[in-house]
Image 1: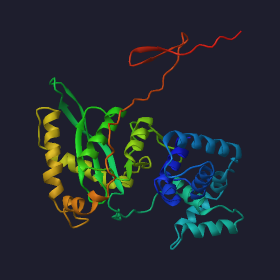
Image 2: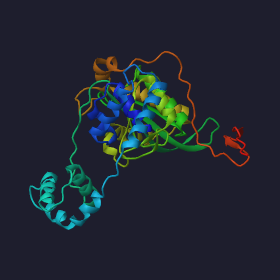
Image 3: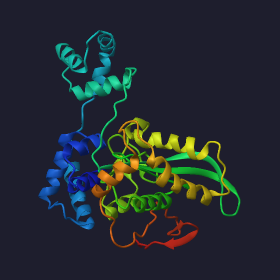
Image 4: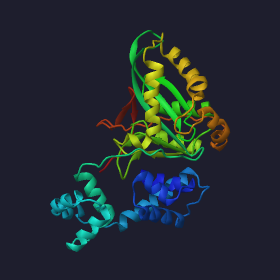
Length: 350
């Protein structure tokens, strides 16, 4: 349900079926089917949140009623595992050619299934790094990184994390140190970053942190409701990176390392407030004025000249951060949230 809703939301933001398919690792035909069904139910680019949820529920009901069980393709491919291993050692072999060879053996499977089977059962080949370009204002990447212990306002040492948001086109960064990674802190950090940039990128790529993604999954990640509400308010789309694939958000991964090298290593701060004052200064006047080896320009120049004007305008008003929790209803028909007891309606059966 959450994935269908996010697919429909991204469609209303102008993302193509191909882009959505790549983001959520879902077959493009499946994405197209969801969007087509939703449009038949009234989906449009100006739809409000409540109607979007209602349409997503209707699409889910239709899909559940027409879905078919998939055959055990992986089991069939496992029979040919030995032959596939031999083929992979040959020069100039491709996955498409292996698909053809399997067809000659009497097993007709898709190239996608062959790709997935080889990826899950054989060592990866040597990887090469390709610097990808991103259009101005299209993408931001976010992550947390553990940076050690800092003192709070009472002087007590606590585990500290660096939150980093990097704009993919200009590499302009926002950094803030915090003690918590919960959903309230996560949302507030995004708000602080958008104020720093004076705008919002169209898409945010994030790691599978529970503050943003409750259940990481290749095919069906579950987005935290607080974060989903934040994305609606600011107008950006959530794009979870695949679990254990840091290269999918390489720009912010690199930024985390730079923060540790330049703001943490060899430095000490009175408390976290002093560290955040230095971090804001570093983002505004130091790292932003250095020349990027990938672009050949200063981050701040690219941001001011090309990216800032392309960011989504900040909405008017104040975003009220809600905290969502899953509670267990006890036998006395009460549940507990943060030490407070709440009752639920009781139905009497006779």
